[in-house]
Amino acid sequence: MMCRTDPAPEPGQTQNPDGADTVVTSLLEDSAEELYEQAPCGYLSTLMDGTIVKINTTLLDWLGLDRSRVVGRMRFTDLLTVGGKLYHETHFAPLLQMKGEISGIALDIKAAGGRMPVLVTSKVKTGKDGEPLLIRTTVFDARDRRAYERELLRGRKAAEEARRRSDADRIRLQEALAVLQQSLLPAELPAVPGLEAGSYYHTASPDLLGGDFYDLFPLRAGRWAFFLGDVCGKGPQAATVTSLARYTLRAAALHDPDPITVLTTLNTVLHERYRTGEGRYCTAIFGVLEPAGSHVGVHLAAGGHPAALIQRANGSADCLRTPGGLLIGAVPRAPFTTARTRLRPGDTLLLYTDGLTEARTGPGRELYGEDALRAFITAQPPTGPQALITALKGLLASFDNGPDDDTALLALGVPALPPTTPGDEPA
Picture 1 (cartoon, rainbow, N blue to C red):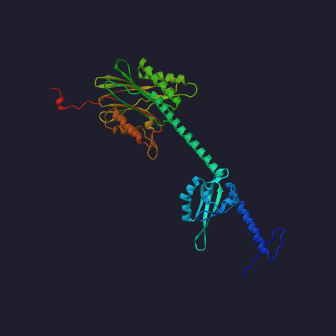
Picture 2: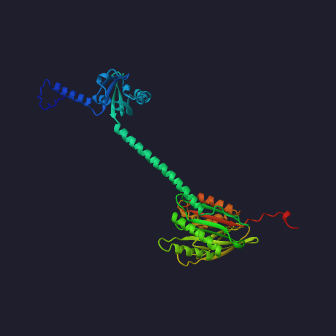
């Protein structure tokens, strides 16, 4: 058997066993009605055609309307702005009819002070037979939320504009750096009688100036000078050293083209210029080409630079080593060593910076290395400097993420002799 416990009387009330339920029910109804009318959100009930049959004071205050003008006289859509009505007809009402409940829909109502953003939740109440009776709707004030969203939107637009400007500035910077980088390299290699030449410069980062450089220029008596080098570091400071090294080598070669003398002059200039503060150094190969009949003599010296390679016409590849050459600019009197060779028809001399051999390859990110480069050149057909440069460009492109450092390539070769036919032989 169930026992019923009557609620305790409110303060100031005496409990009457016969009328206790009536008193408590009256109090609860008064509290519920007050809660409904003064709730922090708007409430309204409408018939299925949208006619408003009940509305609380909170929503009336937002609308600035009297209850007598609303109840039985207006529909829910009459409270909405033009845009809100359109959305209600095309989306809100069909979804509500389909699902029977819809929540958190953003709309605008015609409030006393103008347009007011709200979030609307509606639910269809049905009878015992399942037939829809009315629609109960809750309206939440979304002005703070809308202001927050507008602030977020303004912030997003400001961030997008800042990013757009940053991207535009970066593009302009990259264009300026590209122009400056090109100014540190010859616009194009000169045509050398009896020789072919090819070059390539790979920039590891478009946001940083590289320190690699090369050149090919004429000397007196039909001879030609060439050099290729790599300044330690990147950025404007490295570009300054690059420019100084390039023009020092050219000026020194025009005065005395002996390779050791030229590199010694560059060493003196760099050491004297940067002996205080942060030192600035470079590696370099400088050489002289002297055409002599069917071959071209090569006399070069190097300081701290990777050995030059020669792709021979017979398909082999030789290293032209200059052991003992010291980093240029590091000490007042740096030792340099020379090497000599001859380029015969079909031979190509290749100079490169260590961005090529120190590129990371494979799953283990190991250095590519000089042995791999020599094997790669041996595998290429000896068809001249331009073909070798094209093959090396493909090699650089095949490295994962590209080389981490800038890479300069300079190839010089003697054209192969045209094949002879029996009709070309002398009588």
